[in-house]
Length: 214
Length: 214
Image (cartoon, rainbow over all chains, first blue to last red; front, side):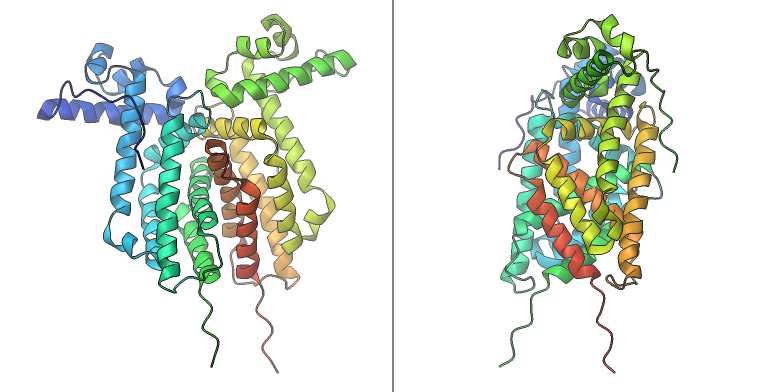
C-alpha cells in the first residue's frame, strides 16, 4: 500500500547532529501546539516560540506549516507501525489482539501525542484539510494489517470462520479512537481497562466452536 | 445532571416565525461551515455567506461566533436526547441496545451533522476550546444514561451481573465515535452493519448464565 503522498521535506539540514536535534525539537513543539490549537489554530509563530526558535529558523528546516504537519504525522505513524511490526503481531489471532493492548497502554502515557492525533483527525475528516489523504490511507492501512492478523487466527482454527473480519477490524480501531476522545475529556476514563474488556469480549465472541463430537 | 454552562443566547428575535426561520438558517449554515472548516477555521463571514445574510444580520440573532457554536451543539444534543427518551430505551437491556442501532442509522444519513460533530469534538478535547466543558458534560451524561439502561438489563436478569457496565458504556460510545471517523474518511466504511456486529458481540458477551440445574 503506498504511503501518504505528503509534500516531502527536503533534508536541508539533514543528518548533521545539530540539524537533526533542531528538527526533532520543532516536531516536539508542533505536537504541543497542534494538541492545544489544532493545525488550523496553531500558528508557525507559536511553534517557533515553543521550540525557542525564530520563524525563519523553523522555515529553514520545514518550508511551510503544512510540511511540519505532515512530518509530525508521519513520525507518529512510523512509531505505531514499528510497534505492529514486532514479533507477536505476526502470530495473528489472540496473540496479535493482545499486542494492541500494549499500544493502548503506550498511548495512555502519551497524552500530548494522543491529543494531537485526536485534534488532527477531527480536522482531517474534511476533504479540505491537508492531512485528509494521509488519514484516509492510514486507516485503510491499519484496517488491512488488522484484518490479516484476524484472518491468521481464522486460518489457525483459533477464531470462528463465519465472522467478517473487516467489520471486526473497523470496530477495534473505532474503539481505540473513541476511548481516546473520552479519556482526553475525562482523566478517569482510563483506556487500558476498557480496551481490555473489548478484547475479552472479542476473544469470547470469536472463539472457534469446538468440533462436533464423533 | 446540569446541562452545559454555555453562554445563553438572548432571544432577541424570539418566537416570531421569521426570526425563528432565520435562526434555523444560521444554524444550518454553521453546521455546513463547521463541518468543513471546524469552529477555528470557520469564520462568521463564511456562516453569514452560507446563510445568505450579512454579518450584522447573523449578529442580530447570535452575539458572537461562540454563541452560534453553542447553539448548534445544544440543538444536536437535544435531538439525540429526544431519541433516547423514546419508549424502548427505558426498557433497558437488549431492547435499549437495539435502540442505539436506530441512532447510528439516523447518523448514517446525516453526514454533514456527523462531520460537524467529529470536527468539533476533535477541537473540543483541548481545554482551551469554548466547547470543551460542553463535551465533558455531554459524554458524562450519555455514559450515565447508558449505564442505567445496561443495569436495568442486569436487574431484570437478562445480563450477567459480573460485568462493570461503566466499561461497556464507554466502549459503546467509543465505537460510535470511532466508526464515524472511519466512515467520514471512507464511504465504504458504513456504520450500521459494523455497529450491529458490536451489538451482537455485546449481547453474546453479556448474556446471563442459565441458572445451574437443580
